[in-house]
Image 1 (cartoon, helix red, strand yellow):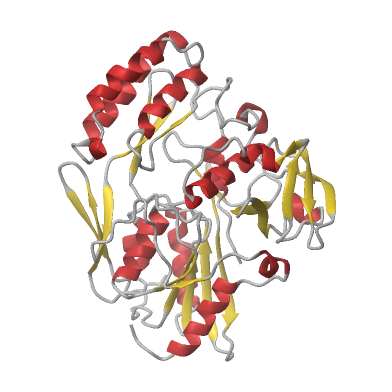
Image 2 (cartoon, one colour; image 1 turned 90 degrees about the vertical axis):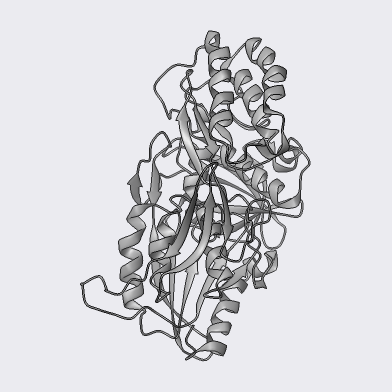
Length: 439
């Protein structure tokens, strides 16, 4: 089972994170505030080799000439892009023009409900990778492996042409965000979608957008996120029991159901943690969750800010959810990741990999592993900005690199059409090979 992260989609396309109205005459004040935040908090005093004072001189006149909030955001975003790092972005505080990537519909019109399927860029095609059982897409007959051809009357291939050339992983992330901006809308509304099915036959369907399920969580100025945790029993090829736990975002409400799932599968031959599509969240949670599998205080990685370092260590969990003493689970642990696993998901999987406590399956992760803060700007927008770097216990820097799986299982359209999950299959086979071994 793959858990889609609607939280990232909401962040990518949701407006209304603040109530203040953007005021173009505040353009200079807003620009100056954004520049100063980076100047005062960036973890690297050399600003990743960028002359930050010169950037101010270059971009300030453009900000002063901005004729709309959207133009101002483009100026600030261009300046932030000079850093060449993740977790620097502007989340609009008002609905106006130019709030979404070129070629997408205005988010003010889209809303936060979605048609109930996830997708990935595979080569030059956008392919459905998972369909939510209770979503509109499932009701319309859409299945994994279908190729998305058009959203309403807008061909996907034309939409993809609006993306700047970049490395394959970054382009995949940009394409995902672009598609989400066009797919999401008001709860109960419908969107006309064109697909090519498994026989490459053109299929046009009206898909109802439905509100997100899960426990709502509000963090600061970000859009509301909905936390979902799933747990299932899986069988290995040799018939052994394996526990499967997945969750869609790193937020505090994950902890209790995750702990209950660990209790349920404590006697299993192995455990699988599914972080595919999980964009991150509260990185400090990794210290508690890792403690279910590590019996001693052990470093997983280090967050480095401008003036300090924060050691992320596993904190052993030696009591179960009923308060009874237990030993941590010391059997094989597999972690599933993909190109949409980011931030805290990368820190956790990379940290567990670095100490040999977990084996990683799937595709290379986002490579966007910087911790970030969220500050309100004078015009009502919210600025996301990185304030630290993260390296794993063995010194691996994940930013720009990502977590590289121990066993890579590339996405394949034929597998999706056949209902196969090769990453999960590989993890279950590995559990068979290592069953009974303590880690």
